Figure 1 (cartoon, one colour):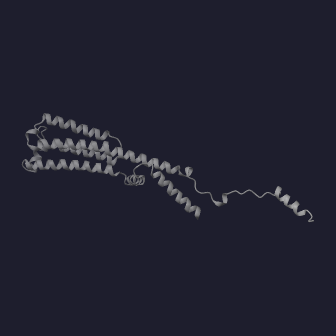
Figure 2: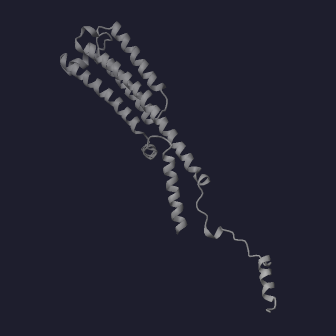
Length: 227
């Protein structure tokens, strides 16, 4: 019983020592990483997906407001969708937001991609399309929404790129490295810190059968006659 208690205490002390490898609390990092694996998506990646959804909803809201301001939703939908004109319509900017949402959610939420190529494609497409549309179209002559919708779409696309490249991918890679390092340290724990040796494993040599020199001298003294 004592050996089991001492071994459990030693294992706890070893885990506590391993937790001091990094300055941040390793146990919290492991729990968050394991929780992310169970949820199939990490907290920072879920935040990124929420921002991508916000991008689509915000651009859609601005486009609906623009339709109402310019004469009613039904009439403007017919004018901008059915009678689409590249130089005057905002419908393509809405479709661009839908493209970003579908591509990024598919890549980073469904497929759980750990690379930047998907966000690079969406941001490059958004940037190039908006620059060409602002230069060639007549949006700037249509009031405040001619400035607002292209600028908002451009800013949101680059914020998504910054979030993924500087927050999501580095944090997930760091959590995985810390998790693997601690797991390797725990796997090597029995070799580095063996448990206490049971009492039955101690070896005691048998007693010697031959008499020592001091015992022989004592025997001779007792055998001498007393005068």
